[in-house]
Image (cartoon, rainbow, N blue to C red; front, side, top):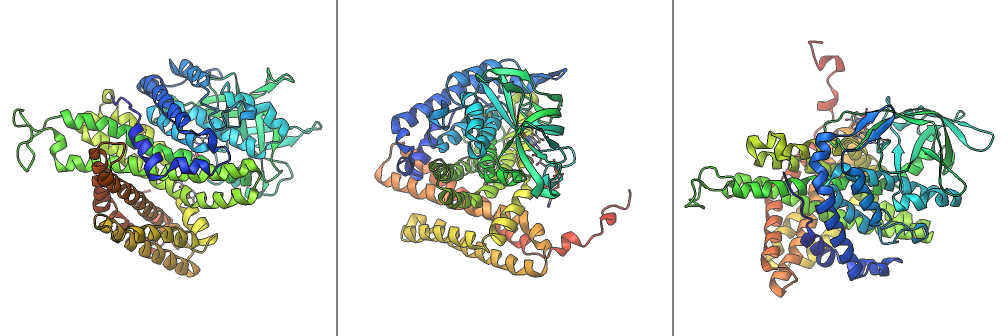
Length: 606
Ligand SMILES: Cc1cc2nc3c(=O)[nH]c(=O)nc-3n(C[C@H](O)[C@H](O)[C@H](O)COP(=O)(O)OP(=O)(O)OC[C@H]3O[C@@H](n4cnc5c(N)ncnc54)[C@H](O)[C@@H]3O)c2cc1C
């Protein structure tokens, strides 16, 4: 069973040496709160919570799962106590405003905390994660009264939240939402309908659950333009802020799932439940999309989390398990055979996991800085500033969510592969990681949907390729800064080629799409994966540049730490980046090979 150890050395390397978080914090209006001592305390405290409270519940939560009994849901043994500890530690309010009882720290610290929590126990992390989605909605779109009613307890964590979008007939295409909201004389609404797959929809961790629900008013236009957003509390809130009577929103059942079994996934029936409109009428979907970028990065973290945990499980096994002799000669001559870590193919698997976990972490920590700037502007009331950073983050979001969750799943599978047949046996804990990881490419927008968002909306429609031109221009600046460094030459050369190809592919798709609209769908996932490999290459090159400088001039870590960074970067450029070429070749091929076959000819048997 993998035991989780928070990768604090890597976290500090990224924060202090690669992404210069101390300087970044200075640019934020709440940045002075994130001084070195506070950041250190948060990292150490989160590591302690994750290693000693959450990780020990990971396997038992999977074994036991959640229990459903006549509308009530009980989480597995130990989850309530762990959640209480989480609340007592003030963890939910880390990056939420002080006026509601939070600590007002930059959002990035929340994301860094979530990565550790998610790696230690993804199912547990779903509960506070969904609350964050609810809190962000209320903060951004709620009236003062709504904020004052719900934010204090959500910030404390004594109440939790959900996001209720999906219905039986639609998950991706939310224009089909049927849940109806009937206006009442007192300005409230009565909601009728069924939502499915609602994470944290019912559970025993908190005294109230605040649902954010997409529903349609009687006179609403058809499709996505006719959906509004409502706050529906499980229990009404009394004048004095205490929990009142039950609102008729009931849990009909919970799903029996492949993984994340300790996270309750509920069917919720709204039987005339009272709801309060949040944001503007008919603009619910627009409101949801405005904070989707941060929510999706929250899910991208899952790719890193599962890659890291699976790597932590696979590494000690690869050092202990003996099998045959290394081709280059005996490595453990006194033993009956060599440890499997001496076989190049096992190293391929371990290095892939390490490259994905550490490369993905770098990508996410960078995106977290953009999220900080976006949130900072929002809190300052600077809408234009908010929109600027939201746009910047918007380019990263589908790449991070789609690419990192796909690679996280691959890395989890590789961890199981390192164990051979034992990886398939439950007690080792490696198959659980694969089962848990599988959901990450599905919810919060499937990989296909992320790919359409990237290529269709962000690259072609909104910016006519400018986002790629701007981003590759930044990479090329990095290349020219390091072009004279002999040890950086191979990274610089490959990155330069990738930048040229990324732009050429984008232009080619833009031209083809004028005649062939299907090309956007047929090329999109390959384009997303290409973009992911290209982006991760840039982050590995940045880490290599810092590591090489530290090897020469000394740093806070031992030289071997920096050496390993350079070696993983070399591995990435030699073994993973070449996959981008395959995607490049596939994405420019005509859409015809995907569209030509008639649906009835997919099979001749049925
Ligand atoms: C464990 C779990 C937890 C969840 N938690 C929540 C939650 O808390 N709140 C919530 O509201 N929902 C939640 N969901 C729902 C989840 O977000 C949806 O399942 C997901 O968005 C996909 O929707 P769908 O299942 O309806 O699939 P569909 O939309 O039916 O998609 C089916 C397939 O078609 C593809 N597809 C669809 N449209 C297109 C298109 N235009 N172009 C190309 N391909 C397309 C998709 O990529 C997918 O491969 C959860 C789901 C699960 C399983």
